Amino acid sequence: MKGIAEKYPVKVVTGPDKKRDRGKKLRPSPVKEEALSLGLEVYTPDKVSEGEFLEIVRSNPPDIVVVVAFGEILKEEFINLPKYGVINLHFSLLPKYRGAEPVRRAILNGEKKTGVTTMYINPLLDQGDILLQREVDIREDDDYGTLSKRLSIIGRDLLLKTLELIESGKAVRKPQRDGESSYAKKFTKEELKIPWERDAVYVRNLIRALSPKPGAYTFFRGKRLKIFRGDIVEGLDILPGKIGKIEKDTLIVGCGNDALSIKSLQLEGKKVMSIDEFIRGYKPDISENFTE
Image 1: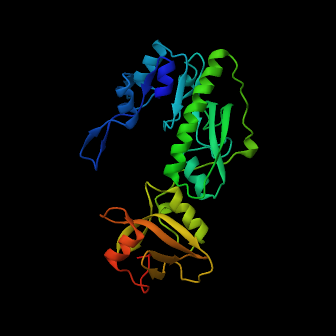
Image 2 (image 1 turned 180 degrees about the vertical axis):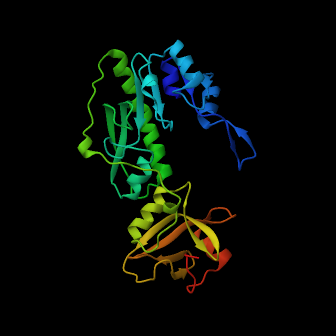
Image 3 (image 1 turned 120 degrees about the vertical axis):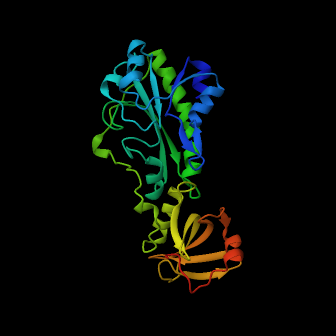
């Protein structure tokens, strides 16, 4: 936001204030907070494509609208109002991973590469013409948090380059190849629970995809337990979900194939702990499991 605001006159649209901090009080979104700190004008409509805000845009159309992780499918009337259209920054190499969760799904599927795309928005979900793309490696130790941060930094630069091309009249539109498309749907509540019967690669990727929030979870002694990091251990034959090995700083849990060495976790109502803190504090036993 800051980079764009330093070069162009900007108005910001974000969601309404919501109850945060466990519902205690209304608080603005981080986007609104940053915009206000930069002295920018901020709008917080419930919907941008209808009602009062649509009338505001209709009466004074902007040159261009930039959308980043907004969460609302824009209607055609709104899309047609800006002089140079509506562009979007999407965290995948479109047409792969269209949809709401491109970063998490790429990690879950074990992808080695992803990227960022700037594109024109049309009424169809993430199907508009591509402007620019940049490929990004997914590192073995990446989780959703680290990868999203890196994509955001790269995406910021790509967005500025895109605006410069549009401003100069040099932007080239590239239609997407629908035959190469895939869809990154939202995670269901059921998908957040660790399926220990799956192989260790899948379990580890799920943990990475959901870390640091909302966190993949299982159960221990009747309480919900979130796991944020784990490493694959090959060649061990341990029942899925059962604790198979405990040492000073090691706790290994069986999966459908191979096993997982847990590194970071959080028991319901407690702070995030390293595995050695967990072992010292709760003294788990190899007769126990991570399923109930």
